[in-house]
Length: 200
Image 1 (spheres, rainbow, N blue to C red):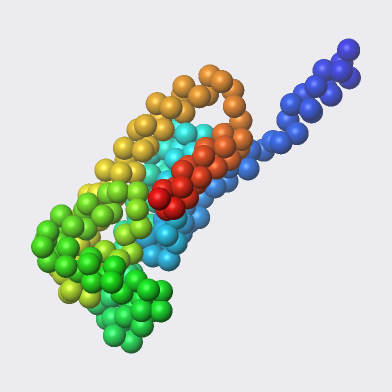
Image 2 (cartoon, one colour):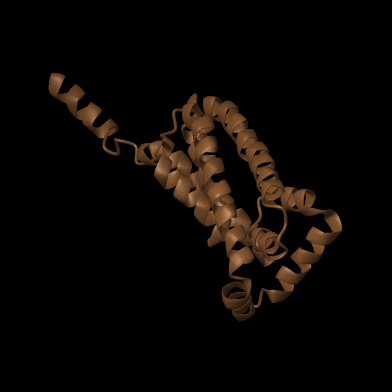
């Protein structure tokens, strides 16, 4: 009887420890992912962090804070790139990527809507904000206003996600779904939804 109980326990714990736990606790890793999403990676960070927050609701606010700091760092980096290296680096690369028209439209939007409002709206939505950060630097917009817009929009965005994840995570915890499986399933669903939107 004792051997049977031991084998049952070992069967239940075959996929432990949970592979998402180190990521949920990795400040550097999450900060790096957020900075990358604000600069080079066009895929919304939500496809990773929403499932991670839901799977680890107690760490949702900490995750939100870390990725908020990462987004600020990435935004500052691309602002500086646009400000200092527009002609030798930014314009040739965007021409090669066929994004020159998108940058022109973004700079026109910055002029018409104002720096704070345009950057706030772009960075608040779950969409790539690289052109906005580069455009703000190229237009030599006020850096403090630019960073305040990023801080406010991303703070509301990630903070709101964390609060939602706290509620959903506690609800889903009652279903006793392992965080690793939950993160995989939700990540797949969100990524598939994002991919479909890109095709429309």
